[in-house]
Image (cartoon, rainbow, N blue to C red):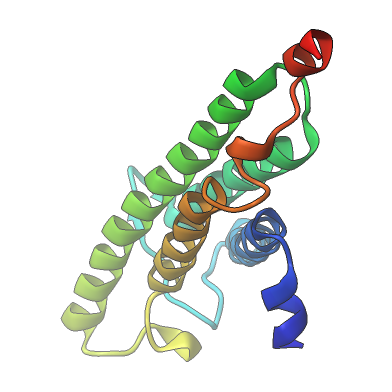
Length: 161
């Protein structure tokens, strides 16, 4: 199974990981929204009175949209493809910063209560931070790969040739 994942194009790995992150954040957010309690998998932390899992869902959804736009949108040539890549990286970087800060809050809450953060042991934001970091790394690897910006056929190039 890992050979199949390793053989996947980089953008497909990004889409797969961003989808996984979005689904996990959606699960945590829906449990919080419908039960007003936290998932048994993790503890809850809040920023500005809003559960951090809602922000995680937002950043993973933005990252997923950016990855899908990078893969499937072909209009605009190299400049727009570069803009889509920058959008993807920006949403991932903001998500990483937010997840690191939320992890800090979760660890502070763990230390104060002298307990682990549910079944996951660590705050779920810590796992989100790792996932954001991996996907951000893959997004920088994307520009250097065969499917990156260097080998893009643009509408401009087709009209010139």
